[in-house]
Image 1: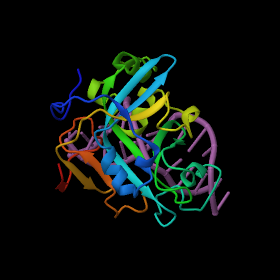
Image 2 (image 1 turned 30 degrees about the horizontal axis):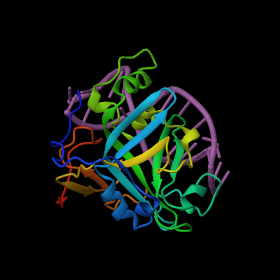
Image 3 (image 1 turned 60 degrees about the horizontal axis):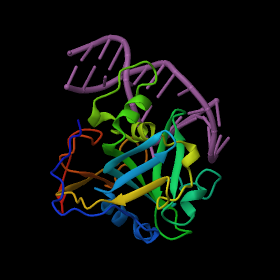
Image 4 (image 1 turned 120 degrees about the vertical axis):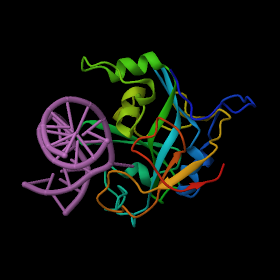
Amino acid sequence: MIVNSQPPTPKSQAPRTLRQSFYARPTLTVAEALLGKVLVHRAPEGIASGRIVEVEAYIGEDDPACHAAPGPTARNEPLYGPPGIAYVYLNYGMHYLVNAVTEPAGSPAAVLLRALEPLEGLELMRRRRALNGNAAPADTDLCRGPGNLTRALGITLAQNRLPLYGSTLAIEDRGWTPQAIAWSTRIGLSVGIEREWRAHVVGSRAVSGKALKVERRT
DNA sequence: CGTTCGATGCACT
DNA sequence: GTGCATCGAACGT
């Protein structure tokens, strides 16, 4: 069962892939604008997609939690490149995390995708999430958490540096806008914990973590 | 409910 | 060698 936080926007709209210029803006602006958009991975095994309901911003070498904090390295090179590119890396030796690179080339920043509401390819997601002989999680948990969503969508280092406006990997606008979002501190960090650079769709059951904070906007 | 802790690979110092 | 932008099982209250 798919649980949306809100009813679909009445006005239907053909899926529109976000263009590169969408990402060439201030990272907090992009982070907020990504809520409600749909991440799609068209893999050989099938299509899987989900609505973005939780993100975090990582901005520049002055952000101690950003991978660009040490300056340019082999791993963080995509952050310094053009916007609209997927930056994928291996975390804790076992989870792939996917970011959307933002801001013009030379300005290292990105938005981490932390949770999706599954839309397409639920069976595929269940198979990918149940590999260890365990039962698949509930549908709302399939893409809940940054490591879980990459697992469910089949995103690995093979997708690192792929454009998000391409044919295999894409973020689309399907005409759905969140009614309310909230900003709070980022999760799982030991540095840079004071910045409120995490945004989520209020009321979505797919959001990771627990109860939250202030609200804004519609 | 809550908190603690092990798994597991690699970038970076 | 150290420390992760995590997850889920195990245990305590």
